[in-house]
Length: 407
Image (cartoon, rainbow, N blue to C red; front, side, top):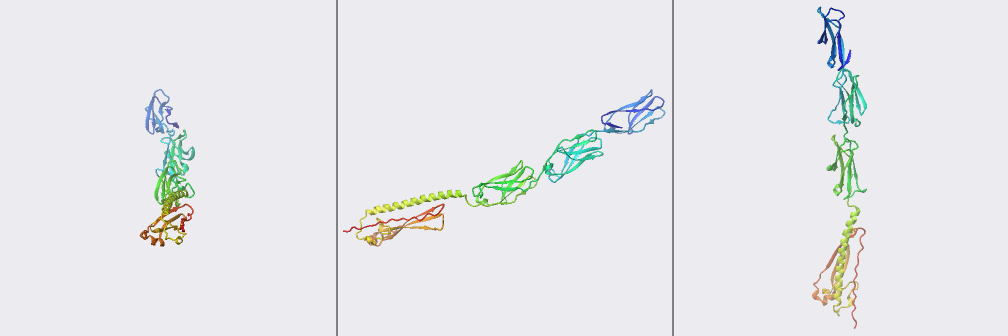
């Protein structure tokens, strides 16, 4: 006979003949359950509330004082519905990683065998396994990135299936080899530019920590808590030329990118123009001041020379009309301006040297010997830096023609 746990059953025992009264006894596996005395004939009965321990062999005896008689054995099976099963994962390491083999185990603590177990991932059946006697069942699964999600199992022994609670499995994907890109504001990176270094691993479970390197020296790091890439900004100096790389690490081992070489030199052209303009403007200002001082000096000399008495012994024909002549100069010194460009091969810098060369005139040497020792020389240097072509050489001419009166 088959009965369910919790059911109330009645055990009946009756002797077909025999003198009264008759005593009836009830047993399960030789364990006495109870007795009943029937004084006037008929059958005896015994009520039993079934539990899981109620399964087994039953019999009864009848005795009217002339010796007990034993009935045949009756097998009573108790079918216990399965309890809610428990799903567990058995992994080779604390973290489930792509490529690992994980064991899914499902077990109902109570339930009459045989029990059929089924395993599910997001309501999709993964497989089934039977426990013909008692205990648990399991299946093995080789993990991929798609195996992350919710799992549950089901137990059924014919008395109604029971489903386990949902268990979430997070499969960790190691970071792949990242890709490093350098983004500059223009095609050719230059000193002073701000460039963006971006590192991204196309695969890998977040969070991913990215580290940036320049010639194996750490520049900085940045985290991507939700996946994707990360970046840092870098203001370029001349020392930033060289090899760059980055690393991605999500706790399962660091992966390094290929090396990216960044080469740049000099300042941007617009910044060169600003610097050249500033220097050139300053030098032109200095040159203008120097030229003004020289012209003022010449003007004062000429003005003072006009007041000087004419030397009757001096013959105007002795003077060289190509050379500038200045009066009221000690020792009758003639000043000859000389201009020359120094280092004219350089295209962006012009050096101008203005020399006032003092030469003693033959005539003045005889007429004014007291002033022959005065040989002071005035020299002015100027540097002009231009952004394009060199300036042409300036020329200065100052001639004074003296005519003696004819008497």
